[in-house]
Length: 379
Image (cartoon, rainbow, N blue to C red; front, side, top):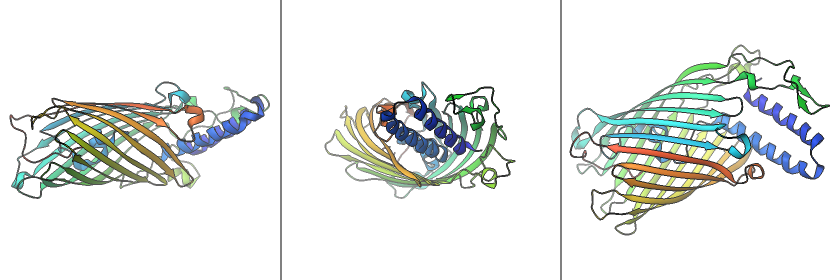
C-alpha cells in the first residue's frame, strides 16, 4: 500500500461513516467535499512544495537566479500554512530560508557568478509526512551589452532530500468496523517498508532579463529539476512493482513578468508561472501595482498591492484553484510581504474559502560601497 492507496482507504471509510451517521440530505455535499479532498491530496503527493509569493523565493524558483540581486547578497525567509479549517493548525505548513550572493571578479561587460543555498521544511497531513530539503545553486550571469541592460543567466542545482512519515498515526481497512462506524486502534495494522528515506537530485535553469530606456523591465525564466527522477517509495521491498519503482517526477517551470512604469512613481508588475510535474499542472497569473514613495533614483522605497489566480490541473480531475491577494513593502533593502489564498475550489464546503496565509521577509545588501554595475530584474 502506498500513500495514494492510503488516501483511497480513508475516503472509502468516510463514505461508510457518512452513510451511517449523517442525514441523507447532507450526504451529497459531504461526499463532494471528500472527493475534492482526495483530488487535492493526490495532487500534493505528485507536486513539489511551492509558494504563492513565488518571485520572493528565488532559490526555489530557479537556480539561475543565484546571485542575481540588487547588490551583493540576499537573505530570504518564507512561511506558509493552509487548510487550518479542515485539518487544524500547522497540519499543512512550509518554512523556507535562503542565502545567495555574487562571487569572484566581475568580468567582460560586467558579467559575474553567483552561488546560493536554500533550505525548506514541509509538513503535510495527519501522518506528518515531512520533507527536509537543501538546495545548492550556482549560476553565471552574462551581460549581453556594455550598458548591462540585457543579461542571460545559467544555473545548476544539486539537492539533498530527507523524507519521513509517522506510521503510528496511520489507520487501515483491517481496523475499520462497518457495524459501528469506528476505528479499532488495537486492530491489525499493516506495516510500511520504511518510514524514512534520503535521496539526492539535480536540476538546471536559464533566465533572461532586459531593461529598456524608460526603465521598463522584462524577464523570462525556465528550469527543470529532479532530472534524475529519484525513487521515493516507502515500500522499497514490495512485490508490487508500481510501489517499488515509484519516482519523483521531473518538474518543468516557466515563469516571467515585467515592470511597466505608467508614471514616474506608478508601475504595473504583471507576472506568471507555469509548472508541469508528472500528471500535475499549475498555472499562476497575476499582477501588482507598485507605488514608489521617493523621487530619488537610488531610493527603492515602495509599496505593492496585487492579486493573482492559481489553477491546479490533474490528469484525473480539476481545476482546483484559488484567488491570492497580496501586499508588499520595500524599504532600505528590506522587503516585507504578506499574501492570503482565498479558496474557490470544490473544497469550499469544507474550507469556507479559508486558504492559507503566507509571510516573506527579505534583505538585499552590499559588501562594497557602490552597487555592482548592471540591472536587477524586478521580481
